[in-house]
Image 1 (cartoon, rainbow, N blue to C red):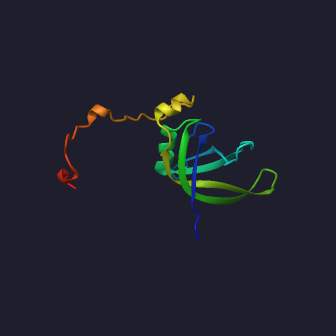
Image 2: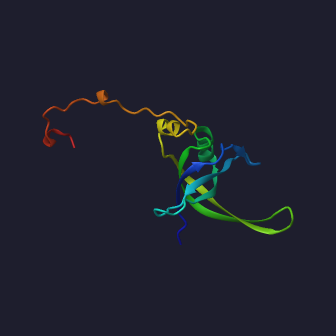
Image 3: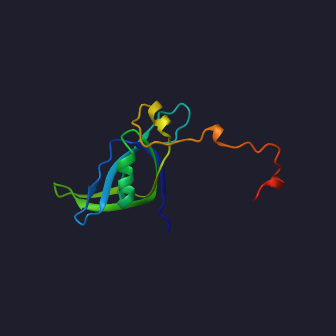
Length: 140
């Protein structure tokens, strides 16, 4: 059996770090994910609930804000519960196992989204010119 989800979407709100009664960090948030569409069709967006635990939760709440593009790898989990009226409900959510930046700080700023974390890109002057070296001169 296989349960793997890979998503890229924008956070719909700032994630908040919480802790369980046992002191385990957790955050729950949702992301907006555009569905594929054909030319001439109306765009549709799905809002997907995400749960992240421990270091992943701390990382997300520290570096991501509402509107930031985020990449998530995880698995689908279902929970059954009763609402305040006693009705049985089922919740579907993605439990994040791997989270990553999808856009640079500069890209998120240009889109009007809040800035996440700083990245430094190497400058072209940081690299030495190899001149006329051939592949035979390389150490690998």
